[in-house]
Length: 107
Image 1: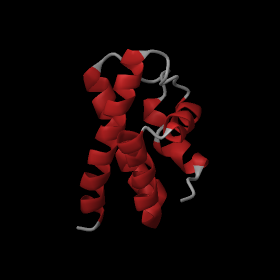
Image 2: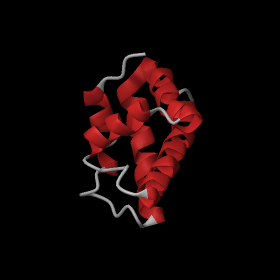
Image 3: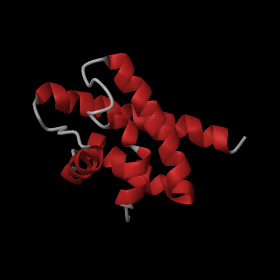
Image 4: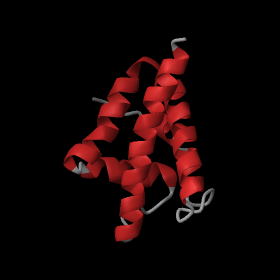
């Protein structure tokens, strides 16, 4: 599975710590859904690769997911336990959003 970091950067720009308050759950949730919508558009037919990549963090704690998303969002997701917990929530919300927006794209 090859992840295009430029596409990921464009899709996840809403999660940049300069853009959102990580400790405002509504802001994080909204930014996560925006990221999901963007990712469905950017990834196109490869959306399953991106979803599987993100899912690997929730299922196995894949450190490549956090390091890649840290690099493309200018956010230190490993800063502390609270931020890492927020990261897990963000990934879960992005995956929910991917399923939602993928369905919208085909209707």
